[in-house]
Image (tube, rainbow, N blue to C red; front, side):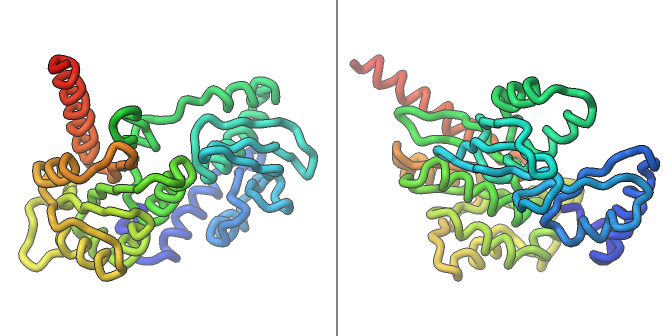
Amino acid sequence: DHFDCYDSLSDLEDAFARFARRVPPDGLILAADDCPVTRRVVANVPCRVETFGLDRQADWSARRLSSRHGQYCFEICRLGQAVCDVSLPVPGRHNVLNALAAGALAWHNGVTWERIGRSLACFPGLRRRFERLADGRGALLIDDYAHHPTEVIATLRTVRQVAPRRRVWCVFQPHQTSRTERLLDELAAALHNADKVLVAEIFRAREGPPRSGGVTAADLAQRIRLGGTDVAGVHGDDEIVRHLQTHLRPDDVLITMGAGDIRKIAERLRGHSHESRMEEYRAA
């Protein structure tokens, strides 16, 4: 997603192709089967290439997929032969591909299939990757690092699988003004997958202070609103927290999303929920 380092997609492909060609002839590259760009990048490497994906034509494939509340069970198949049963504790169809690639790489490094299946079944996930912060009497709070459109779509799709009948709130923090401007339409379309959206001020990272005429959080909010999604007209942290404290229901799902410091919104709401329960306990 750091496309601002390259002048064009062809420059990016060339950079990765040069990187891939550095793998020695006795090495191995595992490549995503369903990505045409990846296939072009590895077309002329000196080493062996194996593909992974959901399609049966891939060298490594995931088959017999089933899911419950977004968590998947499947078979890892190598060259069409089932070699391992996997039950993932982390939700999301995208994690099936992650697990498939990890399993293939582990096998090539001498790990037994029994251990691979057992390890994948107890993988706890990563901080800021669909990290559940609270659930119970209050809303389900989730924090995620997603900040470009592809990630946002995958993460919100996972929320729908995990909680299909609950109202979904998304507090999104755009990352850098330049990227927000270039991806304005794509971000707006991706965020339509939530029921309620709040857009926090842009996390400027290394960009310095705002410049006159630059894209703002309000611009992204308006673009989302034009697509028919309910977007609140508040952008500061305190305003967002107050809005959520007023409107968030106990059966809702709230996901804070972005590569900056947006997690603090969920942390503040989690702290407020704890304080509210303590007040109720003391009053009783």
